Amino acid sequence: MDITLTAKQQIFPDEKQVQTFKDTMNTYTRALNFVSEWIFNHNFNLKQFSIHKEIYHTVRETFSLKSQLTQNAIRDVIARYKAVETQLKSKGGQLEHLWYPLNFKTPQLTLTRDRDYSFLKTGQVSINTNNKREKVDITFKNREHFLEGHKLGEAKLITKNGRWFLYISATKEYPEFQKEKVQHVVGIDRGLRFLATTFDEKGNSHFINGKEILAKRRHFKKLRQSLQKKNTKSAKRRIRKIGQRENRWMTDVNHRLSKALVDYYGPNTLFVLEDLTDVRFATEKHHKDSRYEAVSWAFYQFEQHLAYKSRMNQSEVLKVDAHYTSQRCPKCGTIDKENRLSREHAFFCKNCAYKSNDDRVAAINIQQLGTEWISGTKRPCYTKVEIN
Image 1 (cartoon, rainbow, N blue to C red):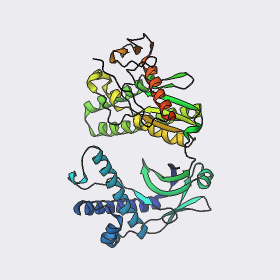
Image 2 (cartoon, helix red, strand yellow):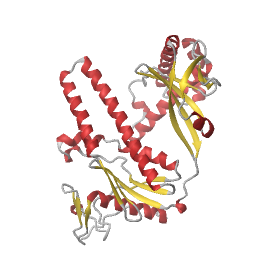
Image 3 (spheres, rainbow, N blue to C red):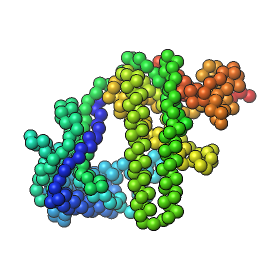
Image 4 (tube, rainbow, N blue to C red):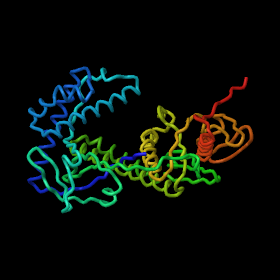
């Protein structure tokens, strides 16, 4: 199994090189928009060969791009349209429903390994531009690890807040997950009060408290609200910075949480999560002061982090049907929405009087579905039986 990560490495161009990079990135971005408009006006043709045949020379001559950069621009636009196409299909739409061509606003540059960028023996990196190749210093963290254990692919040249970075894709092959070797089956219930509640095959539960996380998110929310009332240009800039800072912080939270789980349980672990695809977090079920936190937490990002970290550790993430996992009694199997006492964060079975924490009960039920999958059930789920 191949897993691709992105290595973010800072580079240090001088003033002249900065201007060269900016000029090349701006030209490349204009080329992206040219290709995007062509695709929009030609029935969303996404076949690279035919697009290359039709407009490759036009793009090169119009924007004075080098050969490889021209091909990269065409590939980038096709990839963006295909991503949008996938999103639209999931919602019952098509590319034909787009009113305007996809627009590329942020200056960027895609570089092909060894053709557009390469590492030098001096420790520098050589980067291709419209004028010539520029040699710049780079802080390549874990250089030996990536160069020996990973196959480096394309890189993105990015500038943020006056600093310059290369985002380098790095692919490495890992052993396939083998469920016959599973040692741990861990059910994970995700939430706000507890970021994650776990239950494993030994009956052990862990609660990862989310109170501090909620408090910080509400702090960010209040800052935005106070700035929105001012409605000035400086306030709007500040709002954007706050949003970016909150996103970075949330990403770090999900990164540390997923890493802690993978390290704690070790290899050959099956982590079981509810499949939250198309699940709607109804705002009317939450107090207005807590609606933002309830509907905007990055559950999917946590899932992504846990998935790739697990695969790198010979483990796997399984998504199971989310229906009734919070209503089912794990002892007698009775499903009743009255079993869960949400306000008290408790669970009380109306049939057998089993009591426990509601998040823990959900984790138990999720873990049991994972155990069924290990035993051979392809799509384990809970079904409510109606009694006449």
